[in-house]
Image 1 (cartoon, rainbow, N blue to C red):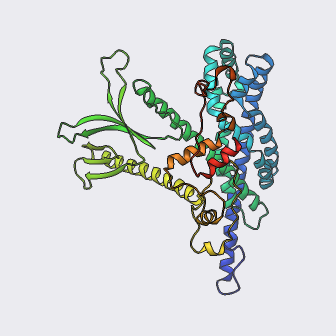
Image 2: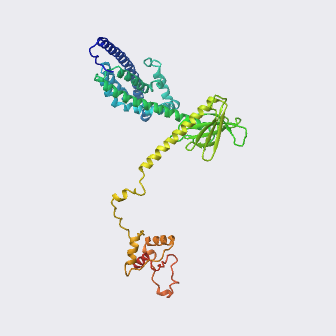
Length: 464
């Protein structure tokens, strides 16, 4: 949108007034957003100061918790408090762009805090159970009037909540700031930086929720034979479906757990079992990498439907009397299989791009210069070209190689040529034992009988 008035004309004065009114509306929204940002920032800094004063500092002075335990619970909240105090000074003076431009390079403190928040809650719960002194201290501190009935569990997520608020405040300020304003570019960069941290918060929350779901399903399954928790696996859904037997037997209800890479089929254990009455026994684990999902019937608004899952070694027919349930399962299965196949396809393409060709293209054979062959290592077999074979045949005085022999004998001569010469050397006769060499034959050792006319055998005998 242009911020300059329209050229002179019949509609010029009216257009100029409308632009001026629009700018005034933007300025009012910007002022209102800035005022709300300053007020909430003041309250936020006060709450951070309460945490540092009544929990972090006193726990450090009294030694109730060890240092690594305190760091696991409070992480970088002290550094966050210091950074936000500096930001508050700029905001109170009306320097929104300058304040956030200096604040964004310090967002790594928030990133550290975000990555540690779930571990902090876990460590806090563990030490509240086993440390009676810490439990009493926490209860006394939370009873202070300055905390306004806020618990430590309520105060710890404040930095994460504040990042989400910064995201909305900065967007409103940017939308209501003229591009000609020097703060526009500063606020735009701040929106991008804060949005990245906000996205990281959402990803961590989603990953933590998925981890809890995997642990829950693992506890539902009897035994530890089926490993539900695996790297890169995501929980999608679960529910009851009937499996249709190809032999025409009665369809039996089974519990299915759908993940991003596998479909688990389980049956309920005997409810009278003393320990496994509320658990399931895993029957099959179907990998989705080579699965094909088809809807046999249930396309129209009928009562239920039938799904066909085709695997390399099995075919599963799933039936449900609920039409909506069948459609949800069909969409979830198709989406999981499609994402898994697309991910494998991308990896395959990358391998193809990095793979070197086995032989050059016909066009490149003429233009590419021929590189000289590497020198042959002594004692190793090398393949002779047809030209070398003819040259050896025409050279006088050179023994000709024997006729073609089996491949196995050539490889045996190769191994014998590579072996040390001392292994095949014959020992001298002992005069005290007589002249019969057979009587003095060593128990261990290999006597090499050279093949007639073999070049490699001749070289070997010269060495020996």
